Length: 135
Image (tube, rainbow, N blue to C red):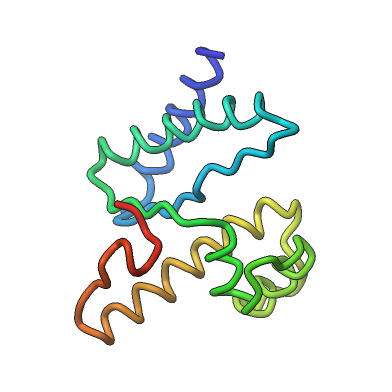
């Protein structure tokens, strides 16, 4: 586990060094009662991502998957296929992103851009509790 987490951190550092990022949007951790081990493993990886982003002093927004889906599709419980189709349309892609995890990442990017534009138009950031975002 330690080796895989180190590889994850090294990969993130490469991406962060190559791109001038200011913001990281990360999905809230979701745990299904039938798969607690998955949630624990994802928690380890999520911690590495958050630590790497914090070291770079990135703005970090932790957002629920339902909020991301609702921003993109209008439906917080959209299926993977619906998210893929909406991402394809939103980004003008010639085909659906595959695997679906790629569409999920692009949906998070869409969320970040959409909410950042809305904030700049309003001239201020909504309180974290009102918007459902954590800092």
